[in-house]
Length: 476
Image (cartoon, rainbow, N blue to C red; front, top):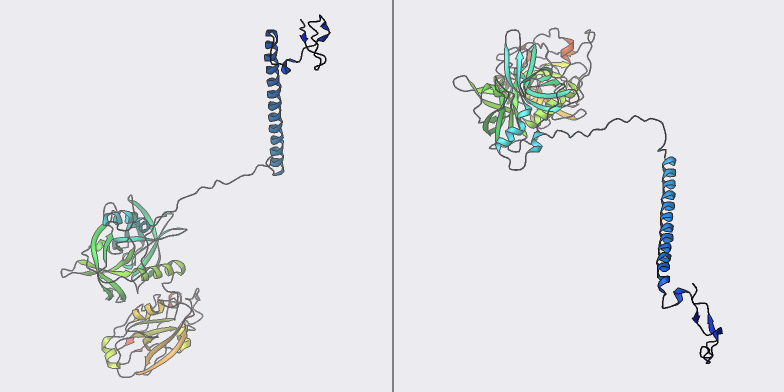
């Protein structure tokens, strides 16, 4: 149905065409959107038209989104292809695992930690060491020192492993492990042993010299049962002590004496400070009036660290080598020749630094630079404070007269002639003065031991009114 509306053909015509009966003024109706009214029949069409417009608009939006998504995908795939993401070559990748490093027990201790916390943290580092010989056996303590590639190195007292054919360590959990002796040192009475394929946390070593009155505990391992540490509260009673080993006669210098009442099982154990660091290792024990070992002497942490590291690295307890062997000058002889003490040279290695300096057997060393030398042990320890290449002034007594020479220290020899074709030891007899100490004979020397610093060697007998013959006196 078509509706007509009265629309003037000329909007400025004032004539009323309707009144005149003229239908020529009616024309086609305006479009619905141009009118302010709607016929009921037009309403449904408008709704349908609006719906069609929305469908068209939505379709355009969806199409645009699909187009943009497709375009983004093409760009992404192109980038991945350019980067080789679709390379069909199979690449084997090793699995990378992050393993938390085992923190040293001392590092786990918060400031102000109580002694039970200290002992608990260090317990896995304490082991019982057992030595088994032909007719004797030993039992004591070993302390984890360093975790290396091959296993964990422990430090202990030389007395517990010397002359033992088999050495074992009982670790936490009562695990018994074979131990290998890496090196020993008579002048500190220290030994280093290795337990292979074991990797344990190691305590920190305090390389600052302890002071008298410092608080600590001595940790040891019981001779039987689980190696739960034995604990003895201790104070550093005195420092700079000297103790002569009752069996070897070697004097150990610069020891810390503790006031702790400990048992023999604590030999080789650790003197621990309040911060959980190792102040020293108990290397010697002193007996009470009943003959029972109860008082411990500890080697300071600084000396423990330097000696053990050198033994592990080179097999020698020292880095600087002078090429001498010797023993203590007897006090009576020292008084006779007018010195407080000294180190008598019994052998001097051929082509070693001492020989180049002009030293010979029978000379008595009394000073290294400004360090007064009152014993062979003090001479050895003075040399250990130096490094290869250091030049030192040696003051020595020969035939009652003081002399001085300058010498550059060297590294220990790495290899020695195995067939004895080259003489390794020279010993020169000097004219005896009143009370002088001179060598009497120079017996054959085992070439494998003679040139090593502080290695065991047969040394010439010493002619003296008071000095007894000595075996194995060694130097640096």
